[in-house]
Length: 304
Length: 146
Image (cartoon, rainbow over all chains, first blue to last red; front, top):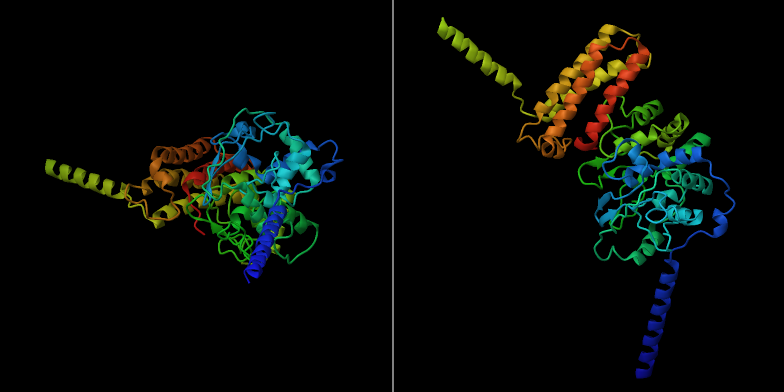
């Protein structure tokens, strides 16, 4: 009898070990194979700059309070407060030691699209790789090429300030297992190249959903609420619903949305505010066809 | 006679103070901002070519922006911190900066009034000058509520 109990316990323990090992294995950081990043050739710097503005890199990575051309120095140092603790934005200027000047394209690409750092570690999703995962290797290569043309900074940002258990990077594997993916975010009511371009910009580099979509307690997007609006992660107020069901902008025409992204003015001549001020300034730097594509996409997603 | 003068002066002061004293309600703030927005709308219609260039209309719009921008900071007296969820507490923490930004908007409009934009393209450029003030201030001080 004792022998039987012992065998059962042993089997259970073995199962637990296998389960834990399995969990450990499937939650390991998983960079893309080297072939994915091979053969990109010389970057197209002009396209890299377009991707750069679409991605809004400066909004987080410029030194806090910098203005004008100084915003192109991606020195980091901004403290991003969140319910999970404070994330200190790193230096991603092309400095070889303090920044990412010494990184390979594969290292940069795996950080951008897989949330895997240079040392093979999981990155925190405060860096929106869960959106950037949709970006093409060409855009990543061009963006990396453009960033390398920007000024270097020797600034070293402090490490993230997170309480247990959020300071355990290994747990991010579980987060990725639950929430990470590069599939479409919502069904679209229209097809065609323009809507697809808008989908790429909004769901990918533009990472609009990171603020405009509500999250559950673990920080994953809530189901069936894509771009439906959410509490402001920085504290006061709300990030608005931008689906066709929005009370504030659901009635806008595509031309109204395009005009807002270009000028910062609503059809009533109210103006952009809060963190969207900077996003709109970035959107204004895109070619007009990209703003039109974003507007077309926002009209094609489900109303919430 | 002297008494009359004193009473008149006292009344004038009292009335003057009365009109300058703002209570700082949500409605007052929104009404003033809508007038600034209305001015922008008039300029935009010309800049976009929806309406023909009209010097008087440009003057009216810029005057509305200037006057209302100067009125605006008075709508945020101490004690009115909770009057509107759209008004950030940072306004009262940085009142000097807040006032300076309103004054800059008024000053930009005044400068344009002194050298009135002379055609459609000029109005477009004026809109950019004025418009830069909107986002710069709203970034820190206006809270989105829906």
